[in-house]
Length: 529
Image 1 (cartoon, rainbow, N blue to C red):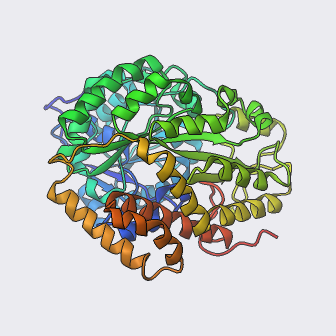
Image 2: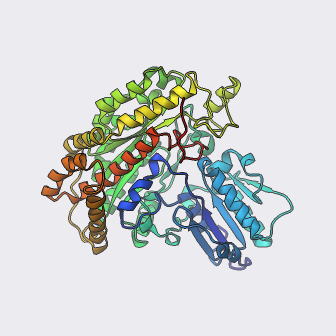
Image 3: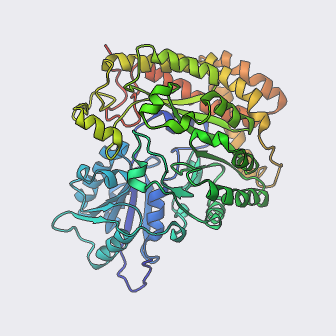
C-alpha cells in the first residue's frame, strides 16, 4: 500500500454522482425521516479514499446529499469519480466541471471497467478492481497531478486480496444522512445469469474479506454514527457458503457485544432457502431482509436466462422458508423477456398475490455490456443503443409500447394502498413474529435512536396519517400496532409503503422510468401508445 510520507502532497476531491430517482432508492420516504438525503454510502469510492497516502488531504462529496461547488474543485489537485452505468451522464458532467476548473479528472468503478469507451473526456481511467492499477495511478499523480496530453488508461492485472482492503473511509461521509449503511464481505458470484455483468467484472469465484475485517468495519460504522441497518452489498451473500458459515458466528457475537445495535440485510440467490444451517444463524445475527432476484415465476423463462438455480426449490416455498426465519423477502422482477406473453403482467400480479412479498422491484429488461444477453442480442440485431426516449435498449418480441403499458398497469395494481398494506399485514402474521427479539440494550435505546424514532413517527403520523389520500388504509394497518406500542413497525412500514405508493403512481402516469438503467429523464409523462 502506498503510504510513503515522502510522496508530494496531492489534494484529492472524491465526488460520487447523483442517482436518477428510482424505485429502489426510496427518495419519497426521505421527507418522513430525520434528515436522510441519500440511500446508501458509496462503498467503492470510500475504499479508494482509504487507499490514498495518509498525508494526502481528501474531501469527499456525495452529490446525492450536496453538490460539489466551484470552491471544492478549486481546492483540489485531482478529482476522483466512480459510479455505475445509470450515473453515466452525471459522471461526465462532473468531469466537465473538473476541467472547467482546470483540474485533472480520474474515473474508476463498475461502469468504466465495463465500458471505457463511454468516458472519452476523463484524463485517467481506472479499469478493474483495486490493485496494481490503483498503485500506478497514485504514483503518476504523485509525480505530476496536471492533466496529461491524452487519456491514460490503467487496467488492473493484479487485484489486491480482499483481506488486504483498508476499512472504507466512513468518517468522510455523514452516515446519519443515509437511509441504510453498507458493507462488503465478498466480490463475485458463481452463477452466470444471462442479463448479469457481475461474473465478467468480478469473477465467478467469490473473493472474501475475513470475519475480523467485517466486525472491525461494523465497529467503525457505529463509531461514525450509523443508526438503523446495514446492507451487505455482496453480489451474492451465499456465493461461498462455507465462508458465510464461518462469518455468521462472528456477526452473532458482534451483535451480542453491541446490544444488537443494527439490523442486517443482504442479497442472495433464492436457493438460500435450502440452507437452514445458514438461515438459522442469519436469524440469530438479526438479518431481517433478503433481496432475491426471482426475476419471473415462469420456469421456461428462468431456464432461458440461465437462472435454473431459482428452480432448486419451488419459488413460493422458498419465500415461505425465508419468512419462517423472520426474513422479509424483497424481489427483483423483469418484464420484457423473450418468453413474455401479453398476459405476463397478470402472471406477475398473481405471483405477488400468492407470495405476499411487499416490495418487488419490477423493471424492463435492459442489456448490459459484458453479459451473455448483450452478446446474444447483438448477434440478433436487437440492441437499440441510440434512442434515449426508450426505457430499454432491447428490441422486445412483444411491441415496446405494449410492454411499457403492461409495466405501468402492473405497477399501478401491485401498489395500491390496500393491496400493499395487505401484504404487510401478511408479513406481520407470518414473518415478523419469527424474528429474533433484540434486547432493550443501551445501544438500542440510546438518545439518538429515541430522538430519531420520535421524529420519524411524528412525520409519518402527520404527513401520512392525517394529510395523505390513503390515510384510511394506513390507519387500518397502523392503529392496532399503535395500540400495542409497536413504534418500530409503524416507522419501518410507514416509510417503505409511502415511497412505494408514490413511486407506483408516478409509474402508472408515465412520470417514472420503467428500467433502473433507463437513460430517459423521468418527470414528463411519456405516452405508451
